[in-house]
Image (cartoon, rainbow, N blue to C red; front, side, top):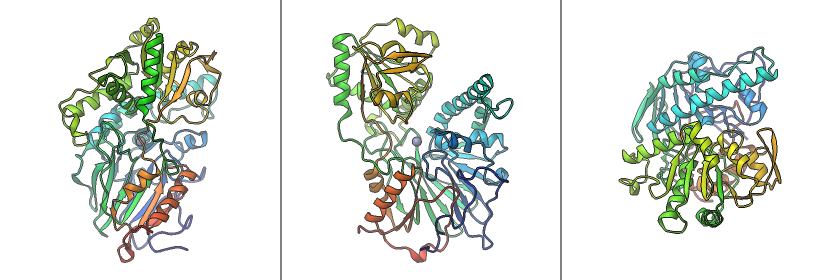
Length: 503
Ligand SMILES: [Zn+2]
């Protein structure tokens, strides 16, 4: 069955991630020039988030994410962009994770010079993560050339560090809760999403048709210790909601209990706790919990090292947002200095990082990358994983096949830096997700007045389908998970509006 305002699956498509080759397609407005939404990335997958809004005379790209992970996804970054770059009037960003903004430097390389609107926090974190992403792209190309991997000769970077830095010139920041006309006919307001610093849900109003569309971006958890919880939705016609954890409920166990046990054990036997953590946001949350435990006297004040220049720069941003009393920070933190109760050292130089090798425990080392796929944490694991007094604490999602995943699955040896190391250290996992789970996503949707369409994106197919099911059974609203490349109309919604209610 189809319904007004949304063609059925595959009924109308533009080229997306599932289409590999062929000439560059073009999204055009329909003859009657109705506003449309096109799901060109982050549809049926958790990366590459990109959704296009087309009105009769404007085109706005919502998020500009990089495809990551599996090879076929990464290759999608190299496909021709589904619409002419020069036809995009503006980009609006929900937040600074690479799967939401990491394609921007590529857009810059392809000639985009329009404005990129986002919050101050997103701009600050993008200034950290985008050049780093460019650096990684260059390293990958250089590695492919050295190993003779590439079909292209020589292998090219998707974009360079310099292009990533240049693309930051396009950014224009917008305060939370302030309506901004990003182009004639499209007004956008950034509302708190509680996921990472600067993260927002976007409330877009298409003035021509009086249609309201809310894009969740990545939604955080109400329990984030530093950021305020996601704002309520309020009145809207359409919701586009992420589904990263659309089929899961997070554990309800208090992570501080396990953290206290691990730190106390390390303190008692001179052990080292190595915590692989994403540089942006996760390091802050780990430090927060350690700080709480020390303040309450539940663990001794062991030395804590953050060994990641990127994490240190992100920490600076969080500290400065607390000092300037940003409207996304929990007000109870105003006037407090973050992490002031722990014995914290941030190692900014390579020499300082290497000097950690000569230190004995007890100590805690927090370092990137979060899944131990690379970065300084690999050196710390290589040094400490063979000692049974030590612990590796995993604090986030570990993608299949990564070192973090192998450790969590009980590997007895781990290959690092060309050698196999015996895993004698204790390995434990705690739940510190900054993503809403299924119940939290549903609770957020329950804050909407009168939506008549919910589109579920940004999730693996099982997660998206589970969330579609859950929304459909709890609310009386048409809910679908669009395919990559699918387009839906945004007109004639109000005549079909009905109040969402509990079934
Ligand atoms: Zn995110």
